[in-house]
Image (cartoon, rainbow, N blue to C red; front, side):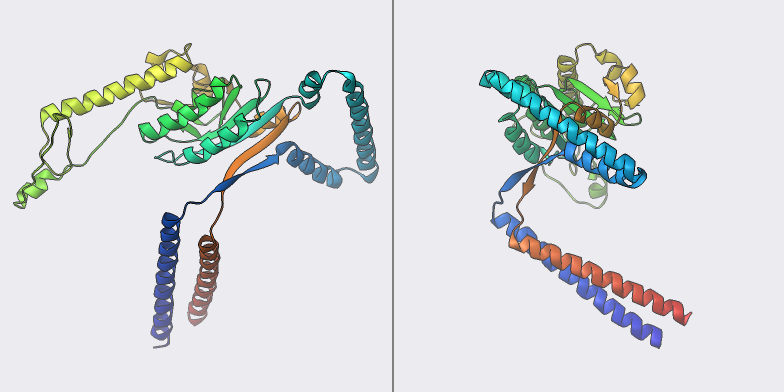
Length: 354
């Protein structure tokens, strides 16, 4: 009886937690639909991050004498840079502005889902960067996406094209995957950098649709479909499909595929498009041999190389969280901790009984 009593309490508390989570999620969703939230741009200098990591590491592994000697050398180097900057002060303001600041690199992240939902965020980031970036700078997009809907990734690719129209060098780094719609975006870059085992390619188009017409017919259920326009609905999920509808559907896929191939060929004209546009994928090293990418290395390695000669900045567009969302997050975290504590206690209790 003790077990069933404890189990009943556990079940009641679990149901209460589930209901509370549903209520909180619904409240947050409703609040998000009623209000439009604005965001803000956040900028972090990657060079500082690398310097801090190096300093923390060297403080531990170097002897006190070595660490002090290196710190002294760095101070001396900084003073020499300041003296050099003063000498350049006599030059014209335009020359001084270009030569003193050097190259800047702006890093954006795009983690794509089937609808390319992060396009809106990337749009804001690109708009912000284009207000400052010049042709002597560089924009790096760390892109991860297995692809998705054509119109979503078409818009995302068009956002990257804004960078090209400003004559600002664009590099796309792929650590895991840039396939289908992901490669539709990546191919706009002046340079594609891929990790050795990143998945690249899938220049193809796919569509599938279930049809339950025979099941409905078997159960004497009729479906009426009325359209105005010969090709308004070529295939349907519940009606009876025709050979004419299938042919039109296949032709639409071919037309989209041809458009995809044309897009890739336009931005990578040296690519043997008929060889790689068969829907297949390649890993980074193979993709390099097929001309799909230009360099094989991780994004971390590429950015560390840039940091040696340029100022590198991470740019992100962060949405402001409403009070309801903050409360919802806090409540969700509290509920999660409570569930974890209860589950631990319950399991420990059962272990002791056994």
